[in-house]
Length: 121
Image (tube, rainbow, N blue to C red; front, side, top):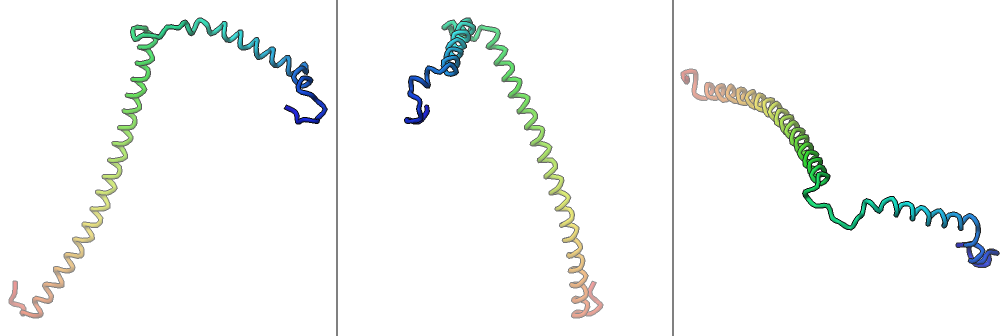
């Protein structure tokens, strides 16, 4: 709406040809849509013995199982990747620990020989 005092009254604004034509077109469009969509809505509910319903159920079920399969496959791959990464990291750390234990064993043998002599096995 135009502000008051702009030189137009509400009657003049609503009776302009552009607004009037737009309203007429809108009303005609509603009538056409209502008449063309009347066959879609006959007041009845679709029951489960209709083929369209079973088709929709089948499409949704196949989409659900397809998504489930894809997600399980990608999840399994991610878990395998993480486990192999963990395995390689643990192997590196165990190798480092083995090296440290060998050095400690050598040092302990040296101390035992120094303290108790060469006769120790």
